Length: 163
Image 1 (cartoon, rainbow, N blue to C red):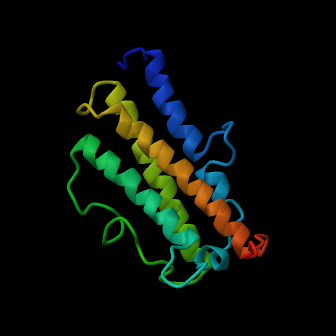
Image 2: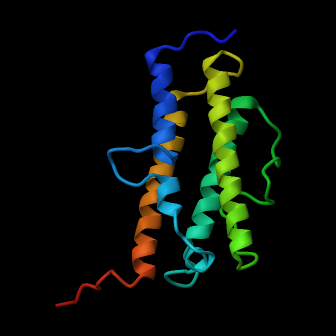
């Protein structure tokens, strides 16, 4: 039987959800920042060797996996993609491939959220709260980057003139 949650327990889940998918005062969360992004836009790079929206989305999925893995003690190498941290994307420039990678992000968020619920119920090892806050802040940080990349892609940023 699940134990009743303390207010701070609800706060952990609320912060995680606000960073990823729930309405928040700070503006778009990660999921909102990805809404309406096409595969072509997601693959666009502002400059050579710079990350694109697609890579940021997979990077966020990877770190959700890493936090969950740390909480549960899962095996290394159990992420859906080979590699770590940053993944070259797209491997295939198609809406189908883009949707599949967005689904991976969604899946990793759901798995992390479930791991946090299990942690709060005392079913997994202790994890520093700063790590759980950090993964939510990570989502918000990258939501901001995606917002900037979307504006750059649309040509709405006006370059400052040097004096």
